[in-house]
Image 1 (cartoon, rainbow, N blue to C red):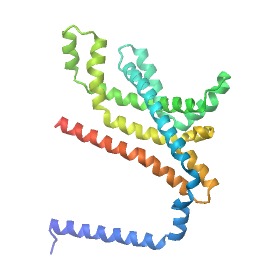
Image 2: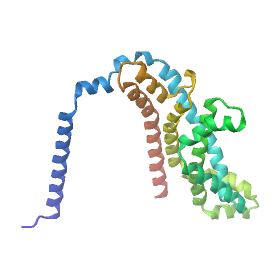
Image 3: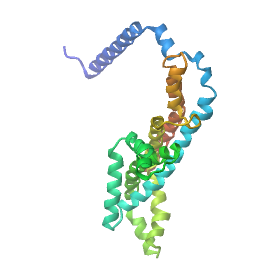
Length: 263
């Protein structure tokens, strides 16, 4: 006797539940819990990391992220407008910059700013400046594409109406198009801040003074300085989650609001 659709769905769900329980039980039995606790959750040994990981590491991570995003936002807007310009060389330049910085890893840009520029120009910037400029350039390439899509999503009729009232093209762009474009791209912009927060962890490769450390650097140094296994990195990861989870919630809120507006 053939099963009905509801019976097949019920059996499929039962099989999935049983398989899930079996996997959990096997993993629970396979893990060496005392060793795992000592290697990953020895939080009682982390007192030497405090309060520096908060006062220095968390503060610097937020600072690098905010300044890099501000730089990337300004440059990204310029690149987006250049890519939409009627003057072809502007479009070529913007496209070349965007594709270049989207196509190479952020770590290479950081190395270029940290070690390449001093070689090329015979002078060096402070490492935090190198970090923020490098991450800002990478971020600008992604922000530019996001803003370009937002600018093109604004109905052209609004610009035409403004022009028919005698408003100059630049003023219509600044007062009508750009504000609406930013409203459209708020969710992906929030996600870009999350990605930038995580990319700031690459700053440790440049070598910095202890007052310039970010969270990942504290985690790496803590592994060698404290007999707590991987726990210092776990702690650094928890602090990253304290930044990224609220941002993720904000992004989802913007997405739901945007969906309600479209309906």
